Image (cartoon, rainbow, N blue to C red; front, side, top):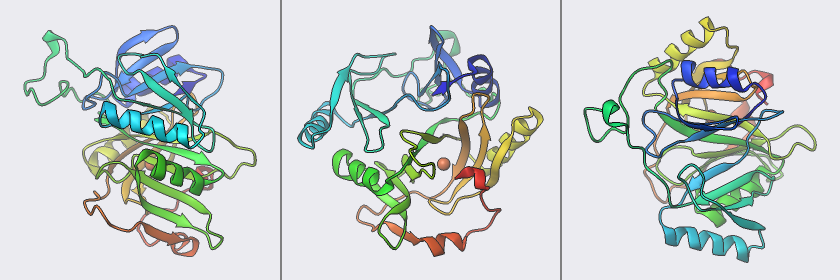
Length: 293
Ligand code: FE
């Protein structure tokens, strides 16, 4: 994640969200939630503008990584291997149809707590210290795209994610698509970029907390820290996630989320919302503000 206000952003991610810094170098900080199993889940980088540098996803095996690279090459997608970084990789780097930089990798390093900070249960990755909003892990990434459907089909056919929900217009184009590689309701999301010429932009990054009450607690914390709350706490229509959206000091939209459903049916058809069905807002809670789009 890029930020033009690195010190202030770092304070937001650590003191307010509750991530910890595991390494730093030259205006970059590697961050993790207490439940992230890898050494880090996010990297904050000083830049002259906010946004996303790249998104990296781990494959299920070394062979799966080779198969994905073979598919990308056969589909004529430009790509190149990137050197291991922060204990992850090598990774294969390419762009999605909207120009977002994506990396896939298999080799990684798993978090080992220092001996004086081991959790009591060896099944936990870190001690539960309850800092700030106490986010457990990185949950999902939401990217904007001028052609949501092309991006969704790219991930489906090229990278093996399945679509759980879409919002579709009569012309077949899509306003949003929610994809996952696991039973988790969403891992990669695309929403329509309404800015003409907008390309490769981030909509938001989301971090998980264990309960809806924890989302409300995050709202209390953010409010008293004078962090602008853009939306929520409320419940989304797609995946039914319970959300809070704030803007971190660098300008990126960050979500604290919980709830939502898990997708256990392996051959379920995607839920398709028409624009009218979505606009009718079948769920409770306040409507999203216009700034959200
Ligand atoms: Fe979200």
